[in-house]
Image (cartoon, rainbow, N blue to C red; front, top):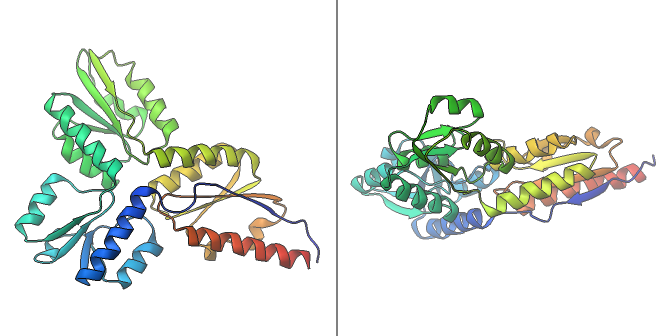
Length: 289
């Protein structure tokens, strides 16, 4: 049966970002040498990649004590200084695969803490990057996810400093910063610590979603930057599906959708995205025959 051909628009920023590519490459080399290692939580938020590394000897753990006397790969989201000290006491051989942009946030916050700023971290409270950064910031620091969280501040005539989770939605960052600037603090310093790659993907997703009838956002369901891409696409009015692999793609979704957009998270392998594209193209051929 003949049908209208689906046109595919694929974002130009596909595949791993610099930080993820660096983390995976370092982990693979480390595993070639040591054969067995642990990571405190998944090294990145992509199940397919974590499963692949598991086959190469990387075991995800929730308690650092399990790595005692062995090897630990510090995930791309970083860990707190307290855990690094604990790892040394447990005689753990560590590979630091922390994203350079996350490390930059740690350096900024450490300096601000020494200068006695009250630190506000805009991000998701339970995200591993934010939890580690909160420990770096120390007592008195606050994580803000939405504007209502600012009610806990009660600051007047104080001095505060603001940083962001590196994978945060930039629109949300600007919105919350706008509210912070109305707190009438004596001094407020703003640091836009959102990753450049994340910003580019968000900008492209917004542009693409305005054109497309349907958008597939490809990436881990627990990946913050991928979830934010899906939110951005939906906000533009595009019908949006967040999928991890081509297996989740239902061909029925493609009916009466002549223009399909594809974007991916920073921790999504390019190969997974290409499999999504191939499935859509294969369906195109079937519909035209």
